[in-house]
Image (cartoon, rainbow, N blue to C red; front, side):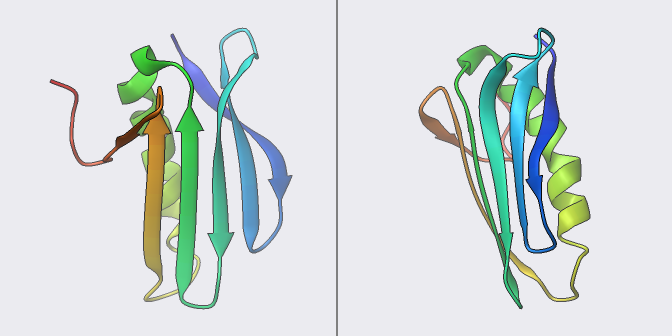
Length: 92
């Protein structure tokens, strides 16, 4: 299943994005909150079968957002199907 990011709220220090499937149905969300030296990322996707797609879609977005400010500490918490995931680990 292909998934995409759809902006819900975009401000300088807060981004809320819906994760939608090819039918434009919401299957999750991604939230960014940026402080002076920290960026918090919280994301959740309901469908277990899109774990790798979820990672592939959000990695570039996180990378781009982390360029907002130099020396920004990034804290990421992501869940797929109710289980926490790590962006650097691949599904086995």
